[in-house]
Image 1 (cartoon, rainbow, N blue to C red):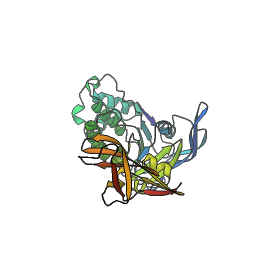
Image 2: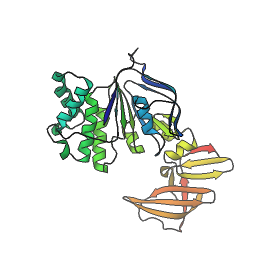
Image 3: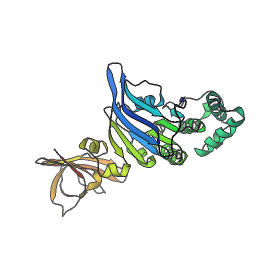
Image 4: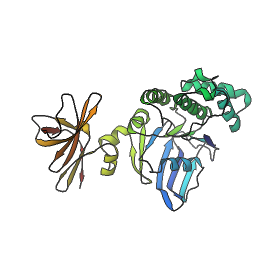
Length: 317
């Protein structure tokens, strides 16, 4: 389903935010889902929104699109705002007819609809599907058409709710590559809710992390990964190793830990998880637990190994 929010105001400059919130709070029933959200989306930006299940990501998109009223705070929109929800529902007609119908609903003149629809299909790599019945599409093809339909509207702000959900790895990788090109526009701000970190890294210029209804991090993906602002954000971004030393806490990812006979720490292998090209090891130490990736042949459960740590982030315990 695609919902389009008409323009609320006119742009005042190319560098001004196309969408801005201040203190946005959203309540559903007895639960406060979003708390004091401050964010800005500017033209040319492709922003990923990442967070655990139940964090409020879909609720935030609904509020930004205007389909869910906030309990407090403000939302400022400039230009047309379009949102594509998770469900890629299509009418029982051809792909091209689905797109032209959406453009007709938006009020695009009939003489322009077919051309704009075809341009959107080309942008997302789905031009060969134009005459295909929607009922004959695969899951990946439906996702492409779903994206083309909202791109054809040519919104100023585009909001996408997990557009790659439910696809196998190969189909998702191909769609990510095409979507990264299609979603970039110097005049449009795009916010994409993504399912995992790989999608965020493949797409985004900027990453927002939403946990328990609050934006807890905002920055470039590489920057947040290398220097997360808090232990909460670090753990969410895959810093699952943890060593405690007095009041200090060292968090690591598997890439920071290597098996090394000259390493200064000794650990015991607690678990071995087979991977395609090696194994993931869970290592226990007197003051914590680490994870690393090792090549075959690998240690077994119960083996004592020496490890070296290069990297990680430190916080106060």
